[in-house]
Length: 115
Length: 113
Image (cartoon, rainbow over all chains, first blue to last red; front, side, top):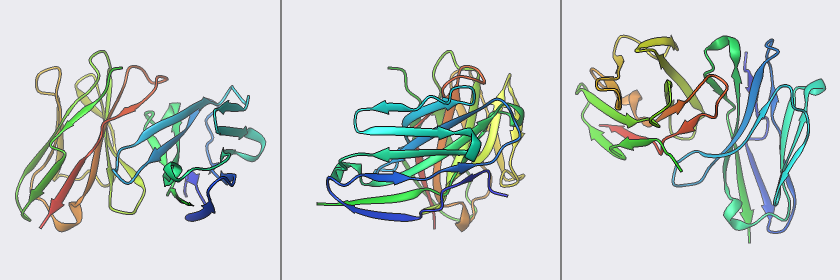
């Protein structure tokens, strides 16, 4: 079973539109961490955010915001006023305390922002 | 800001050859990882390494793979006899503790011909 599900394979938006990338996770651990990474065409993984399971407070960082809801096991990522530079593949990941703290990545969502 | 480095950035090798991918984790980190990403697919866990031994490995990490921390700074992934399906981006990662941030290197793109 997938521990991290990103149901949206590809999304295209027009510049300045808002876009939300969905992430649903599955774990039995009470202590875990959730992450979002951006992978631009150059291939590196760029860290965006980390959330621990005890902190459900939503976070905003500039045009980025994250909505963590334990009740629905979701950790969604919203980009407001999207820009062409936001075009990339975005990965959600889960790290559990009981499984060696390896990262379980979702399959990624490819975002294309059209100028 | 500290960073994980990986060399080479791109390696081309012939099927059946041995390759060694090198990583220099962040100096005070204790946990080290290798991940693989086949083109267009998700990032997959290969192996974790702590206290000079493998702590966990995935089913991908078969007998063709090995890891080593030979000198206290480098962390290497060896593929003994490469196959075409080993072509992928290989990411090294390190973290200080199990609750700490995990830092990924820029990746080594391995192409097996």
